[in-house]
Image (cartoon, rainbow, N blue to C red; front, side):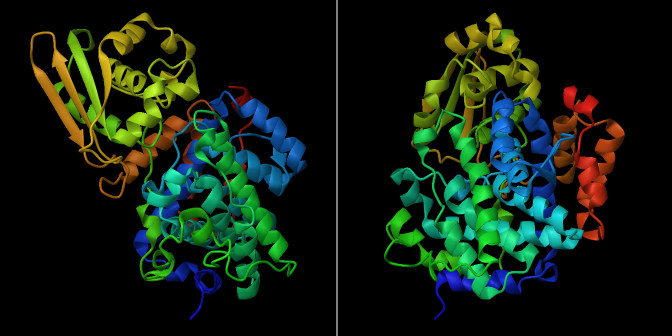
Length: 456
């Protein structure tokens, strides 16, 4: 019987764009579109200046495109910086069963190698798809219900596997080389929740992307690695990271069911568990339209594990904390009937009405009857009326999928002020028909911002 690592390597090397069903092709296009949009928005991050200096020092100059910027770096530098940009504003995708972001690790190295080697749209899309599939398969096998409590943060743990697979497909690794690439990816797998509450959790994504790039490029030189990095009883991923895990999940229905179709797309900035809350808030606003000034009390119900992770951010002091703060997010959304990146600025954090609302009228409550994918909002009005809404799945998740119109609207918000409207429209059109593109040069030109746009 082939090992889990051998099965994934065999599947990845034999995989082609034609193997993807229509639903998986659509998901891959949407993941690529969303990643590019998030990267353009990522230039607003507080940390991006410092991280850019690091990526330049680590990777050096080159010809690889930086999304939303006129700058170019080496494939390694571009992978590092684009990986951070995608996740910088906390609005990228999530594979909720393992609480792991996927595109920050997969898309940047795939773009860098596709640009370097002149790949066409189908090859790029297939690389994104197979990289995403391998990453979530490894995540499923590790069993987050075990690995999460042990402290493992999965972007840096499973991300290198997906990135190595995506790059391996683009550079034509054979089966043994792909197996070695997975072994080298596992040799670099790391990242723990001890970094929670700091920008280091986003470094896990970027570093995971770079680790996968290095793994595939080294494997191309026939550099040997573990033949079963996933299933080996002595230090394999399943044994070391989750006490044996669920090996059957790695290969179950491999090639006939694409697990990466379960990756969720966030429609609002904010931590993944905040998305069901925002879904409930906007459902309630749409139905009831409560006046902000007339609200006496709002109670936000979440799963206990979510409460424990987010209760500390009751009064955020900056963008990063605000993206994790339930009181701030709900107060801002209810008052403005919207919540986007422009809701996150110094004037918002110092706004006396929002601060008073957060302190006196908003309460985060742990409800053992809710899962991390659920949230309930209960509002008591000054006149005594009570309003409530519950979301059992966030908008943008497989159970409450986002429409293409939703993703277009998110894209337009992400690129506003960074890309000229004509250029942004062309880029959107090209991303939505990427598998029809024989030449990707225009894609990379459209992803670059002018000096004027970058300054804006």
